Figure 1 (cartoon, helix red, strand yellow):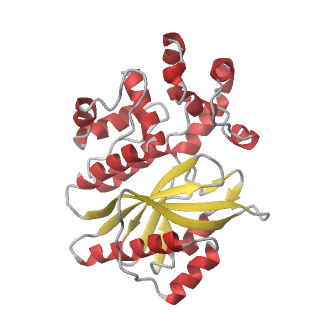
Figure 2: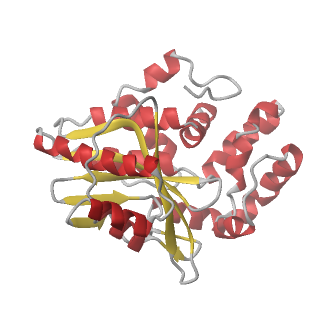
Figure 3: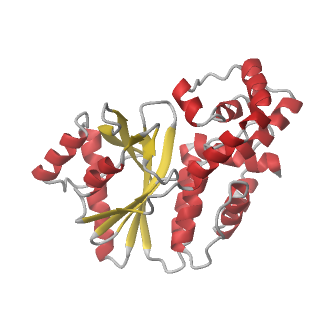
Length: 309
């Protein structure tokens, strides 16, 4: 079971189709049928660090399977504000803004909120999953670090300004350390326990992706996620050791976001997430939203590698 859980968690952070499928099933599981979404759509927010300990916007765009046909709803003033915040935004980014504006029309069709998948990029190869809920007069956004900052640089101001283009009221779900921050802190504290194993496996299998020194100082166990991508090359013993390391992997933003979204939409909330129970709670959700049997019947998780849909 540990191997299946680890492969699933890794699949969710490495395969967009798989994470989109999970969010779709959670939205569809809303017992009150009050939540709408543009399925398989990710709003990508690209930013980079500036000198004042804050992130500045680069551009927005989107990921979506197939054609995306939406009317041009953005006003000249909204476009001006968007380009002021994200100056490299091109026509694809303008279309992403139009998707946000178009999805708000669901709010006059019996839905009380619209789910939007958010993907943050800080200028490195690793993305960060979050989400936003659009309501009639408010947009509320979430990301698993909870502090809306990384490497000592804040980006809450950027998100507040961005979403205020599309709604009169903007808020975040919390402003204190979130689950992923607590997990990073715990892993860093326990780093001496796993350090030698992780370093030996990294030296042996030489993952293609490399974390920066800054990333490794922020989250000592970052390299665990690169090992999962090399598991198909490993001996059975090393692969088994790698799956065990999922317990000290902090890169679980998709799973954490999925659990938080489920708790927002359902009255039968799962108990508070502890760092050791993310996989357990995710699998409870997979079963509740009727996705677990589908994944297993389609053999989406093979013996050695996870198959991206």
